[in-house]
Structures are given as C-alpha cells and as structure tokens.
Image (cartoon, rainbow, N blue to C red; front, side):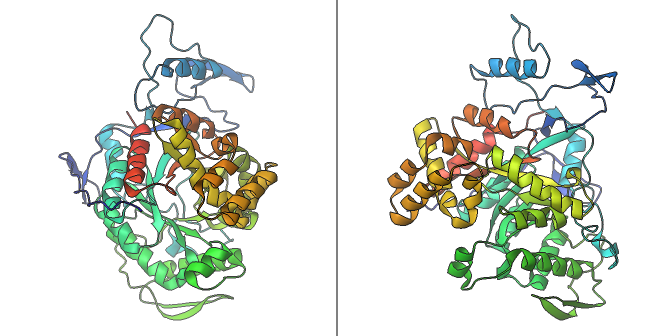
Length: 492
C-alpha cells in the first residue's frame, strides 16, 4: 500500500528579476548547462580549441563530447573522463594533475539564461516558431506544426523528468525542485488538468507537460480551451502530450474502444489547431470523419500570447511514429525503448513523417523516456526496474519492442508470468533476464545511472527520466525522483 505524505511547502528564491514580459521571476541558482552532441554531417567548426580534425579537405576545430556530470566525485569518474576524451581524439587530463569533472557547457550568463527560461513570452523554447493564427488553409500539411525553433549547428541533449507516480500533493514541490536543478521540462501523467496549473504556479520558467493525456477522453474543442487557458495564464509554458492508449486500457478506463487511433488522433490535432487559429470574434467550425462541431470560438483575448501549445505524441508503433513526425513538435518515447529500437525502428518511421511535413530532425524534439531506479543496493534497483518495465514488455500492443530485437521468446515468458500468474512479483522479475532489463532501462547507484545514460547521447534530443514506480511506495517513488534530479543536476 502506498504511503501518503503531506504536501511540501513551496520553495521560494531570494533572487528575482523582472523579465521583458513584466513577470517577476526567480533566477536559477545554477546556470543551465547541456550535454554537447555533434550532429551528423556537421561541417562548421566548433569554437573550442581543444582538438582539431580534417573535414572536406580543411582543418576544423571540434569539441569532444561532454559527459553527464555525476552527483559526486566517484573513484571512476577520472577514468571515465579520460576515456571519453580519448575516444574523441583528445589526450584528456594529464597524469599528475588534479582532474576536474567535465563541466557542462553554459549558454550565456546566468542572468541571461534566467531571463530566457523564465519568460514564456520572450523564450523561443516556450513559444511557437510559427503563429498558428497566421496559417492559411492552403498551406502544405505540417507546415503549421507548432514546435521549438530549429536547432543551431551545435546540438545539445536536454534533460527532462516525468514525476508520474508521485503523490499528488508533492507534485508542485517536485516540479520546483527539478526547475532549480536546471531541467528543461517536467512531465506529469495526464489525468488531472488542475495538477498542471498547481505545478506551474510553483515554478517560474520550466516547461510543464502532460505525459500523456489519453486523447480520446476529451473533445477537441474542450481540450483546446483547457490548453489555451494554461498557455495564457503561465506564459506559454505548457506542453500538450497526447497518446491514443491501448485498446484494452481504453476499454478498461473509458468504457469503449476507439478504432483507427492514428487517424482519429490526426484529426483531433487538426481540430484543436483549427480552434487555436480561429479568432475569438469569428465562428468556429470543423467537419471531419471522427469529430465535427460548429459554434463560438474559444474564449480568449488576443493579448499577444498564442493559445496554441506544442503537441508531443506518445508512440511505439509505426503509424503513430509517422504521425508524430508529421504533426508533432516532438515525441514522448516509450519507457521501454532500447538504443537499438530507437535507432532501427523509431527514427526511420519518424523520418517518414518529417519528410511529409517538409521538416528535418532539427525541427523535432525526440524525447527518450528512460525508466530508471536509483539505489545503493543494486539488486533492489534492478528488481524495481524489472517490475516497472514488466507490464509494458507483456503488453501485446508493445510487442514490436522486443520482437524487433529478436527477443520474442523473452516476451512470451514475460507474458506468461504477468498474465498467467497475476500479482506474482517474483515470477515477473525472474522472467526478465538481467541483460534485457539493462537494455531497456538504467539502474544502480547515482554514478552508475549517470554513466549508463551516456549511451543515449547522440541518439535522442532530450533524455527524460521516468521513475520506476510500479512496485514502489509513495515514499520510495519520491526518493527515487529526488535522487534522479540530484544525479542529473545541470551545473554551470
């Protein structure tokens, strides 16, 4: 039985400043850093003089990849720093010198970072790169997709976290904690719209996302209105994460199945964007195969804040992955996606959708949701990881994750344990080999989890920590979330 806890008081900062939009905001106590990742095919020279190479017959300077910074100096951190630098062609720290852990790059001064991140009206991360209200009906499909602005030549991997599974009363404080640690996005399970407002009320700059709403429980116009209100109240910081859900889960929770989920979700996104783009003094109408409505436009005033929100889609199967690339600003990757599945299955399908919309990967935020369990007791962490990914691995709708990697036999054993012996945690844990669990999540001490997370660098745009909470009490879930936030804290 999960332990109930009392709400944590809102943390406040003594350092504040007024942004260009007139809002008062707290400046982050630490500057925001990101993990350097050189994009494929990059020909522009890096500004770092640390190493050089030859591209296209010309000598250019490059910067070796930075490592994620561990929460504390560990005995192996010096060796990892040296090996990482040597793999990049740098000699690394010289012997005999004191080794400092690699510092994450900072973009601009602390004050500039605080101003950019604290104000939705003046941060390109928090506003659409194109105002949907100016999109015309004759534009090519996907040309009006709401997303972050195109990335620069030098890319970085951001850090996000999902606080799904935590106690409702603690969510605002956890969001605040993640913001102070420099996380770019905080996701919460999409069940309660008021919870997102509470999280935004306790934060100043971090994006808050629904991870994810089961889309078909809403009518498009109503969801568009809820989203527009959150955007206007909190400076455009809301991210709308949507998923079609599985057939069984929809029947269990919503009482019915929703055939053709990809086509239905595509139409729902178009309907919401029609609602966001229609001025409040005009009639709103939409006539589709699944959704039709006509009446008054959304109740909002044109105060300069776009009512639209970036739409991220949760996807596993090819149809949904292509839809994410076509209409989505980003992807909420599945918590059991391995490196091989992301590389061989996810990206090729997303690329098809991106090509349809006339965009590239630079216009898309692929967030890899990685299940993690942190504990000094590695066996405990491994067991918690297995019990969290087990139900996902057993779900028939997600069969492609294991089958595409030649692990169909493992899937059969996991399904036999999960469905044949319901409630038997030992049987489920034993059915998942240790190496399979390690491929589909990360676990161990804080230092080990940070090191394991490096395998996703260069593969995804944002690493989203997803706490393994299936077998955890509220207290243990809260502890795991705090450990994850501290381990991946962004330092200047």
